[in-house]
Image (cartoon, rainbow, N blue to C red):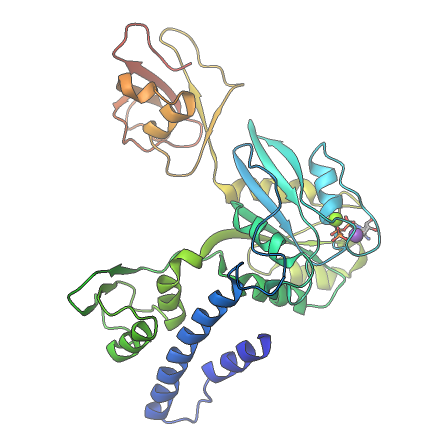
Length: 377
Ligand SMILES: Nc1nc2c(ncn2[C@@H]2O[C@H](COP(=O)(O)OP(=O)(O)OP(=O)(O)O)[C@@H](O)[C@H]2O)c(=O)[nH]1
Ligand SMILES: [K+]
Ligand SMILES: [Mg+2]
């Protein structure tokens, strides 16, 4: 499997001396091939057809808190050491591989939020195809809001790309936005392909043939992004099997490397460095997690009373007053009249807003309802 993938990647980078027409033909065939490959791979990963590889089910840990972070990495990179450091949970640490055999949840308290951190067994090459507990680990990663990819600073550089490949292979897209392409499948009417701007990497014929291969014959497609690639197009077709997750890469064990090497690692994109053993950089990693999760603290206030800044409601980025209401109580918005907002999202203070108003971190919100005396708790 990996070999085919590598071959395909090779084909993708045509040598510069190729004629443009020849290049175009290669890319065209490559597009079709990629489409087929993605389809076959998804079939292979179906739990029902997987050959006894532990199915696709994750570990049985229920989600709790305001967000979930999954610790993913090769064995013995220090995942359990990290969990034991940043939460009150003690997960077994040892020098041998596969010390951790199941998912161990811990709670990280930060900025008034409770973040569930999931320590997971180490994965190995071939995890995507079911080696070790790979499938279960990857399923757990898919359910999280963020992956903390723990890497060993003393080990070879390929580890990062190898892990990425394992996650890519099962449809996880790290630090990517869903493609700006709309696909609407219909019952009849044929295929209508619209490019909002002249595409640089796609053409009608290519999309038509890929869709035909998926037996999608009636659909509307709108490609908004001129730079959209065939891989992104396939991701849109396979959207039920794709998960877009944030990832922070963390190199642990920096106590064992030179300053030159440390400098190189620290400058990789979306990367932090630490030594759990020497307690170096650990709190910075936690800060970075908080930033990446983009959670917001909202303080509620009753009429005539100062807000309690020790008790925050935790909501996700781009949350509205409606989300804040839901966070207080499920039925609060039924009696909602308006809200008063103090803080960064308010144009003037306090601003009177409706349910659709988007809040900012550390806003103070007072909810006014139809029933007399109703205000946010
Ligand atoms: N030198 C050094 N060793 C560390 C550091 N952090 C962890 N270790 C050691 O690395 C070994 C593996 O740590 P674990 O926390 O068990 O690693 P893991 O990733 O949970 O391993 P598995 O559960 O087996 O996948 C232990 O011997 C730790 O003491 C560090 O910052 N520096
Ligand atoms: K270990
Ligand atoms: Mg462990």
